[in-house]
Length: 175
Image 1 (cartoon, rainbow, N blue to C red):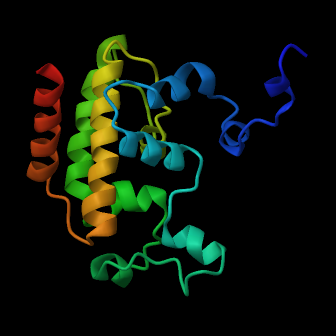
Image 2 (image 1 turned 90 degrees about the horizontal axis):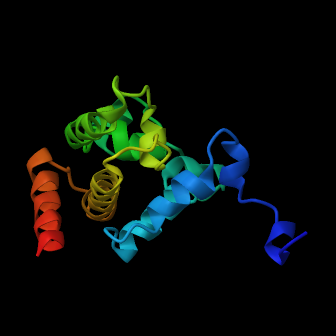
């Protein structure tokens, strides 16, 4: 054993996704200099399965049910897990589609766009790309906006709001 850290059990996320090399793929993304502290914290909680959502709270017996509280989602009995909150909830659906389309364009540098599940994108487990920084910036901005607007303020996240915030961040990085 070369270091004491070699004795530690790997995080549960690494055990749940043994096919993913966290040290080379996921963790460096969390350290990318384009991410703000809040974005790094959000991505960390998403990657490690500790982001607050009703499915998790219900499992811990801290919520009466696991359903999304948005009325349209509730009518369809949609469970509010991480994928629902960030990808399929009616409040984020349009922004998610825009974000996913943009990410797929950037990940296309290896030819055909990879077949990636929603949760793989949200948890920063997508393949390496020549556009690593852009992908990380888009993902970090998206999860921050969903957390702020949809989760904390209980508002919809329109595409133009997300794109506007993203453009402002890009301008801030350039200057």
